[in-house]
Length: 97
View 1 (cartoon, rainbow, N blue to C red):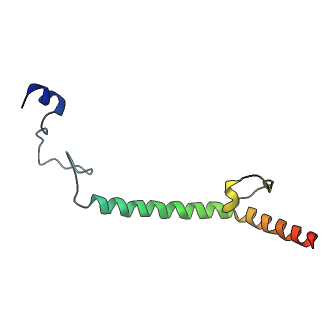
View 2: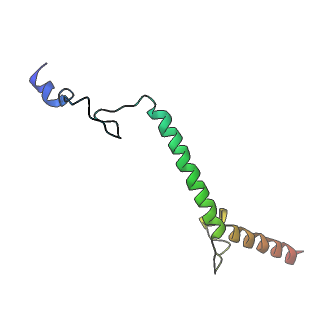
View 3: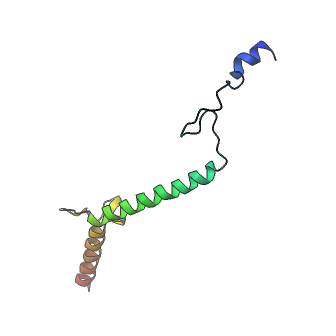
C-alpha cells in the first residue's frame, strides 16, 4: 500500500475489546435483521402518526370557515369543513333550482 492510499483510506478498523456490550450494538454494529427491524418500526410510527392525525382532524374546530374559492389543505381531512362545504353546495344547488 502506498502512503497516499493509507492517508486517504482512513486506515483499518480499530482494535476494540470484544467483551464490551452496548445497547446500540457496539463498534461496527450491523445486525443481520436491521432491514426488518427498520420496516417494522417505520410501520409502527406511521400507524401512530395516522391515529394521532385522525383524532386531531376529528377534534379540529373552526370559528370561521375558509373561503370556498381558496386552497385550504385541511379542507380534505377536517370533518367540520367537509360538512360545511357539503351544506354550502346543497344550499347553492337548492337556490339554483
